[in-house]
Length: 166
Picture 1 (cartoon, rainbow, N blue to C red):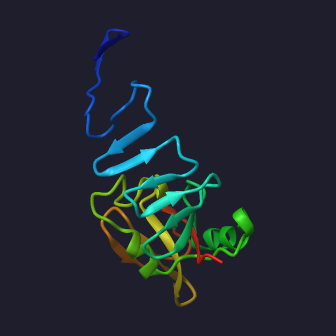
Picture 2 (picture 1 turned 30 degrees about the horizontal axis):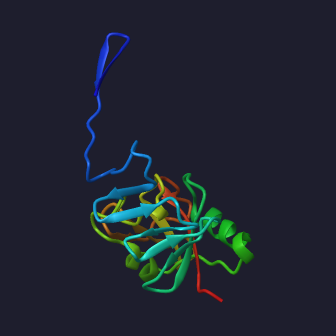
């Protein structure tokens, strides 16, 4: 499809494997091997992750429940405060460990190497683990590595909340 806008030409390329059924009246989208059925009460992706209407993401492999924090640069102290005060779906949330975040990493999956249900614009997510009084561990989904920056670091750091089901 080519569109002329103010003398500039914009060409859009549709890749069938990335988004199928669009415009066909169907409610299913496919990205690679991941499929989302928008007619269901919650969305299932690749059989492992699903999300309910409150945006709580369930990981069927680990039985952990996830909730994505505000999509903005966040220091460790801001992340910790946000999680401690999170009351979505009855509360009981905590910051994840390094191992829990590493378990979400899947090279080539979605944007930032994780399920699209856990997407943020930031590449780095804080953990509950600190390293002395000034540093904390985080996990970088862009490259699959863990780091221990200063707790005042915020760009491009974000936060996920996690809990075990009751």
